[in-house]
Amino acid sequence: MALHHGGTRRDESDERRRLALNPFYGQANPVGGMTTAPPKHRLPDSPLPPTTAYQLVHDELMLDGNARLNLATFVTTWMEPQAGVLMGECRDKNMIDKDEYPRTAELERRCVAMLADLWHAPDPATAVGCSTTGSSEACMLAGMALKRRWAQRAATRKEGGRYPGTARPNLVMGVNVQVCWEKFCNFWEVEMRQVPMEGDRFHLDPEAAAALCDENTIGVVTVLGSTFDGSYEPIGEVCAALDALQERTGLDVPVHVDGASGAMVAPFVDEDLVWDFRLPRVSSINTSGHKYGLVYPGVGWALWRSPAELPEELVFRVTYLGGDMPTFALNFSRPGAQVVAQYYTFLRLGREGYRAVQQTTREVARSLADRIEEIGDFRLLTRGDQLPVFAFTTAPDVTAFDVFDVSRRLRERGWLVPAYTFPENRTDLSVLRVVCRNGFSADLGALLMEDLERILPELRSQPHPLGHDEAMATAFHH
Ligand SMILES: *Cc1c(COP(=O)(O)O)cnc(C)c1O
Image 1 (cartoon, rainbow, N blue to C red):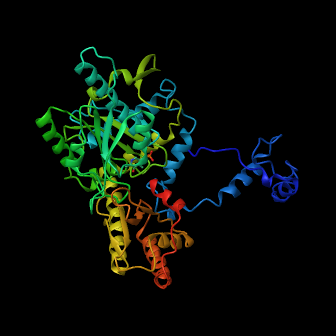
Image 2: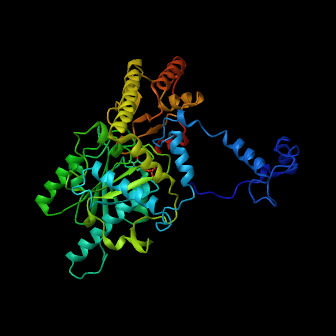
Image 3: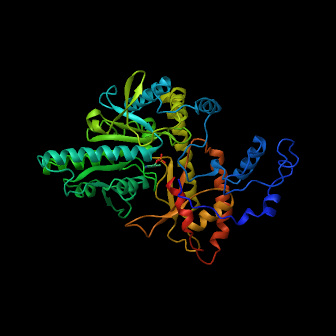
């Protein structure tokens, strides 16, 4: 949520407000009979008829973008009408009120069990997990569990020493992590230790990660897949490097997998890839139900391998049918609709359905990447064969335009394709990224190609790149 300051009142003159109201909505409205639009930055003095209020809000929202043309976001922009109906039926249910809504609570429990099974928890019946508002909340919870376990280890080591003493906890990760990990480290006062990019490696390096670990390392975060380029981090190799570290030094560093996108892709289309609880060092995993889980925002999931990975004192109890139910969350009240929609989607698609959807999305991404490569003006960094996401930059011999020009020109045609600069040590590299989601069809892909090919002749004849606009770069975080 953006942090807002009070708005300007410049446009609040009586004359402006009179003109702002369509006579059809106001004066000609037999119930309302208003002559001016309500103020925008303070509460109106009196109520409006619902039809007028609806029209005013509806009209303003017409200027929001067309979500289907947004190739920046990972978040679901299409669900079946049946899912919409179910969500409407559940929008008044409060997820925290387990006593009042025991069936919603049960559906949440089943979703956790299904994910524990999907991610190969050693004993899915004892794996613990919860729904969240998204991966960011799930990452906060997973990070808190890592930090608390470190504190417990440190306290035992120091035999009665005061926690936290003078030691400062740290968390190891690639520089490519999503911004939620920066938030975690800032909010929970954990030192962020980042492995930079190097050459053509745009994510975490196993040896470099192990080298950053010490006795105050609460864990290593690995990402399946990176928001920068859609690549999967080598989670098995990171675990192996940490196994070797343990053999050498005795340090036992747990791994968290940030599977915001990939944890709902890899299980269906990369079944041979071992990235999940099959690796004994993986202690927790998160995913965004609202990304490749195929549910509208906001729902996420956090799971721990077993109760031992989630310190008991972090768990709170709420009343549930006369007994109590353990909960772990940052929020208290929150809608039940998204959890119900997740359960609906699990039931509706099953493994085969998810496989078909993710496979198709990946094929659209791969063929789009191939066709962009064929143009000759671009060099692919990734090909859409891990996450259905690829990043590309301009070919070395292209000097007339840069990725920011391409992004800007595509935006003129309605497409949102973000351009951004990579972090250390590749700040020399700027890329465009395309995120394919369910609903971005091969037909839409063909239209994007047409538009790209239409703008290229003009771009090639520019005297030089027209420079970039930092505001555009922010879109890639979604
Ligand atoms: C999207 C994303 C997040 C944040 O997830 P939200 O569900 O948007 O809160 C965290 N990590 C990764 C790798 C992501 O792709």
